[in-house]
Length: 241
Image 1 (cartoon, one colour):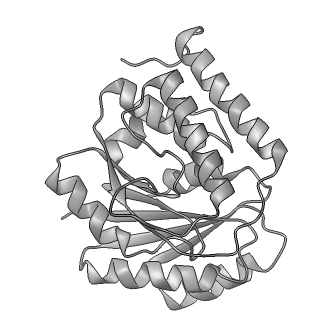
Image 2 (cartoon, rainbow, N blue to C red):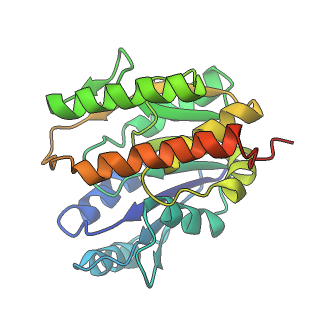
């Protein structure tokens, strides 16, 4: 029987993390498939850890990985993957911005289209998106930039809701270098170059308290993205065999 892992990184999510975990757990339970929830506390400075511990005490499928230093979302996900057991592995954010109802859609897409990776896309025609105009513009610009560099057959790499077959992660994770800003892109580039099949699926992005986009974050995202291109095309760092 298939076993599902949900890896959920969390950093300073005290107000929402317990509700988010409860919503995710509810949808996973509906599947009637064995599952685990691995929640990775990335050295939060608020009471995120306490909230996660409280949730885990009441839900046997959930476990906490508590990091002693902040290592970034990408590395936090990798630490969670290292202890995961699932044949299918979800990556999800520890907030309530993305509806966990997409769990069912993603599993359906993976089976129906016979693909190796399913990713959430704000640009899917069936997506329900409430998103500030500035962030929508910046997201579209970044995706055009990524298409120019990598010719990825997808329109959105940054949504924090993804489903991978384990064989993809076994190949990709040892090669990933980006810790934070372009982690998701690096994984998808490597999966695509190896020949794994990727499919975009609709998501529901709820209206939330979106914070402003810091110029330094935009700069670092583009630097990380160019570094991936350089390693791929100039250094030939990634071994695709």
